[in-house]
Amino acid sequence: MRWGDIPLSDSSTHETSSADLASYRLRRERELSSLYATARSLTALGEIDEVLDSIVRAAHELIGTDITYLSLLTPEGELTLKASQGTISPSFNQASVPSGTGVGGRVIATGAPAWVSNYLNTHDVPHDRNFDDLVTPEGMVALLGVPLLVGEEVIGALFAADRTERPFENDEVALLSAFADHAAIALNNARLYDESRSALKQLQSAYLTIERQVAMMERAQSVHESLATVVLTGGGATEIAALLVEHLHGVVTVFDRHGAVTARCSPDLPQARPSQWPAPDAVDQARRSGRWATTSDGAGRWHSAAAIQAGDTHLGALLLTRDEEPTPVDIRTLERSAQIMGLLILKETAVAEAEERVSGELLTELLVSPPPVGPALRARAHARGVDIDSLNAIVVVQSETRFASEVSRRLHAMSPEWNGLAGEHLGRAALLAATDDAAGLAAAVHGRLRRELGSPVRVVAEGVPDGTWERAFEIAGKCCDLMLGLGLTDQGSTTEPYAMYALLFDTARAEDLDRFLTQSLAPLLAYDQRRSTRLVATLSAYFSNSGNLTRTAGALHVHMNTLLKRLDRVETILGDQWRTPDRVLQLQVALRLHDLRNSIDRQT
Image 1 (tube, one colour):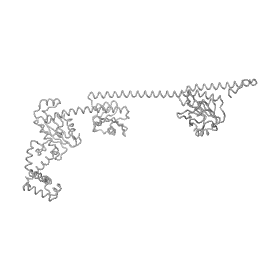
Image 2: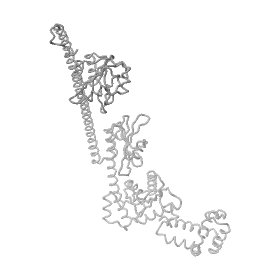
Image 3: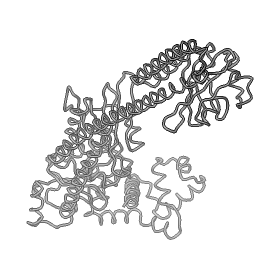
Image 4: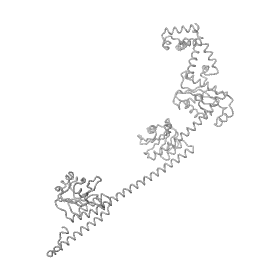
């Protein structure tokens, strides 16, 4: 019954109307009391889902319809069901009504309540087929919708429905609208509360992130200061590794550019001796990328490596091994340490190169200066801890696979063991040393270089008793060339085992060699030069094959008749005595020396 339906001026029904009015007022008071009580309870809620369920449940009890549900407006303009009471079909709870359709569409468009007594049969509102398909199994007939308003904005709609056809009274519409107004406020408060709580969580998360970042920065700053202290106090790879062990709590290994271990420290053994330690895949991956890499092995250990780079030059790697997976802070610390390690290596390299340059300059001046050594040169050598008077041997080194500059660096590194000087002179690596055992010196230098270079190397030592450095250098260098001519590419020796070839490498006897070769081979050499023949080569092959004509012809790739004609020509030039034993020996020695001399000349 609506308030306006009650007649107030008819005296014949005054008594009955008074009773109805009292009953209506009592019902309205209960409804309003229930409405405000429900509204107060809604304001105490916080979670959006809880508020939605509470709104629908309270509306269902307040209005007393078969079905009550609430839909919210999406950014696309659709009304999507969020909570319901009294429904029997699970699929109805997934209902969504497109913009501008159904009772909800009219409520959203007008911002005012709307109802129909029979939803499926009405033509007053546009229908959505999908929603109609959900209405049929639910048995929903009469439908009332009221807007959820926040200020002037419609955020959704609250619906009440019955499974029988009927109109909705104005009181019902007014009651549900009043409830919807309170519900919209509560829902908006819940949304604001949720946004505030989300903002608070984001703020807390940001604060925690800032705290972590600050801790990371402080830790990184601490490590950086410690690394700077290590470098400034003259520390090296071992000290840096020990520092990283302290901060990163794992085993730290330092590799050089060739993959050899230069330092290794662990929590149990802070300064372990360098050893051959297999580099895991992380080291190779870091070297290829120029940055860092992390891998794990079958034992559950994590290996994190950072490449030590200087531009495009690979200088080595730092490796952290531990049971726990490294954090980004650990990786950053490892990278920063690799950068410091790179600077340290560059500094050490620059110092070493400066020392090598000074040492090489002193060595060159000693080799080119005639004795006696002047006081200025002595003073410079003394400043480097070298006693020139004690230097009594020179070592010359040659390698077919390494540059002389690289070999001279190796010699410079070992020169303090013999209180000597090392450097490069005339394209050869050389070492001036103080020793009583030249043969032992040659063997020791050869062994060290062979291990470090990993390739064949020729080492010749020559004693220098009278300070004639230049002559000794030339003799040792020529002997190095002679070794190659003799097929010796990997040996350390003095010049003494090659005394029989002294005519070749002793420059003081160069005239003797020329005289001997002239006496022995001059006619044949002159004939070859004048006629463009190969008599000298033929005779050399003949002796090399022990006079066997078949093998000699094969070695020269000529026909037997050609060989016989050449030998006849040799006999014509040298005479028939060339086959006698003494003459054969002379020719064999002369031919061998001639071949070796040509080989040495080609090398120089």
